[in-house]
Length: 138
Image (cartoon, rainbow, N blue to C red; front, side):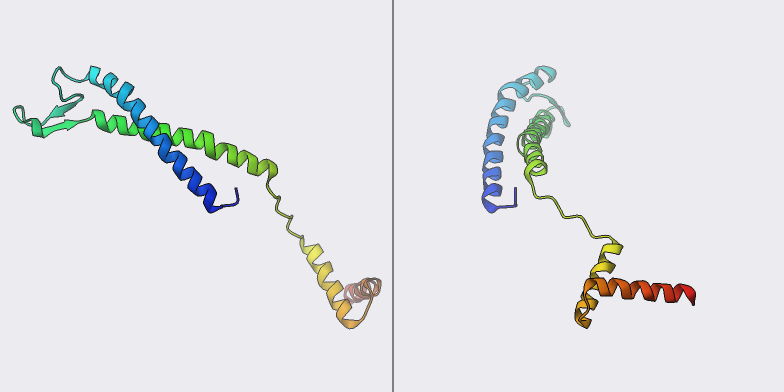
């Protein structure tokens, strides 16, 4: 959750292992289903550019199988790894401190200046009120 190298390594290994599982599923189930839509030749789903040359066959089945592989791996990694990690991070992660407002920053600056001049905070407040009244009157 904090960007550790070990966490990243585990995710890569799990993704690689899961890719092998998805590939075997698509080869065992999806490829035969795609072959149903192909013609009666043994080349599978696709089309041939030149009628009598098998080398000119463009196989569409492996492309579809690859896309299904990718979609399955991406979906599982997102829903099994990314979504739970995001939920855990939101639930248990550290919250960012709120940004101070302009007024709070000005008060902090006033207090630091008063400290440098050897005044207490109450004296600095009184001094700033006097100066504000003087500027309003002028």
